[in-house]
Image 1 (cartoon, rainbow, N blue to C red):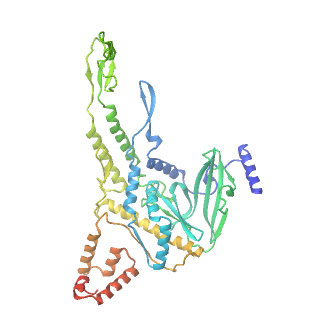
Image 2 (image 1 turned 180 degrees about the vertical axis):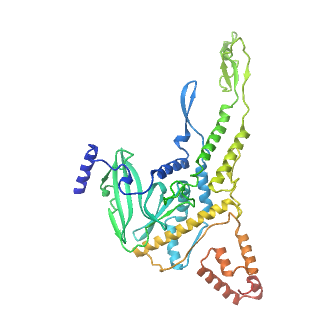
Image 3 (image 1 turned 90 degrees about the horizontal axis):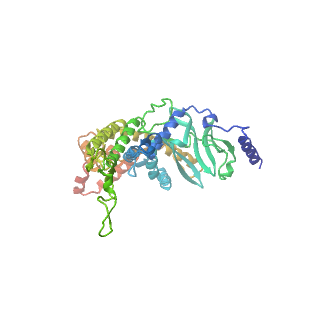
Length: 490
């Protein structure tokens, strides 16, 4: 009751300008990040959504005066992000854990939270916006995963190991007021602190004043203190691209952050290509008197010399008694536009880490040529670079889930375990080719059967040992013909 009264007084004082609201989040706490990074995230997000007003809202002048229109766009930021996410992560990705029981528990958590589907979606957002966050929490003896885009998270402190403190931002509106929910994840010594706050503002540019949390989130506590944690309850994922915008920032950048000029040029070229058909459509100039209605004196019916519903005809008052009918249709520059767009697509592919020719424009749309990629290609090397970072993130996420499980006694886990992430590399070579390659390595004494099993099946060392043991047991009871099939002992 007392808190509500204080909050109302603060709102009244705020309206009377006796108490100023917090203009931005950096005024609340010393957050050592430049605004430039988040301004660019807004630009990347707009481009990913397909409309960036500064580029795509065009003003032009006609004989009727100033007009505006929306530029046509190829939507390459969406295409790039989606293609990269599909190449790097899909449901064929296998996550193996050395402890069998823990592996089953983690898999049940992933399944309950639609992990594989959500991660692929949010990886796409991560490639577009420069990062994403996955946080874990317990709810009714179940572990929940929450996925957050880069524009809704601000890091507070970090080191070489990663981000250790941060704030999650969620904005919502009710009536003409904007509300901002801040969820702080902080360390105070060995204690992990989670704070929840809600701010109200009538100005979209300001954070505003603090209002009671229970009015909007009755099930949340204003502050929760947790002992015994070794790491934060969230994991920050980012593309494997160095941040050349703010080299001291722990945040990632969009995969197309350094290709904005090329993307703009592509949209200009595509817009011109599209308008070529509108501006270059067939036109026939006819004398203005020729389109007038003529009445047949015998029948009384009205006739026109030209079809007034055909937009190819344009009436024009000719001078000097010239009344010729003129066809002013122009030749369409289709091939020139297609060549220009393909040239820009090759530049774009180089800038984002794809091989030249990965994207082509045939006049109907953009096609990708990433179905078959050699291991030596730039696309495959870029894919592997992103996989390395994502694998580390998944391993950290599993550690977070184990922490939460132990904290709320949902399931137990050993003190040490190994996590192996095997990505789908069928884009480079199929499974049969990989098996044949491993057989050749074993035959020539360049690899062990255990290592080959780990590579082919994406298993941990312990899992490979168990499979080898099963194979050896089967060999003991095998007939001579089956022995030939399995080969000699290792």
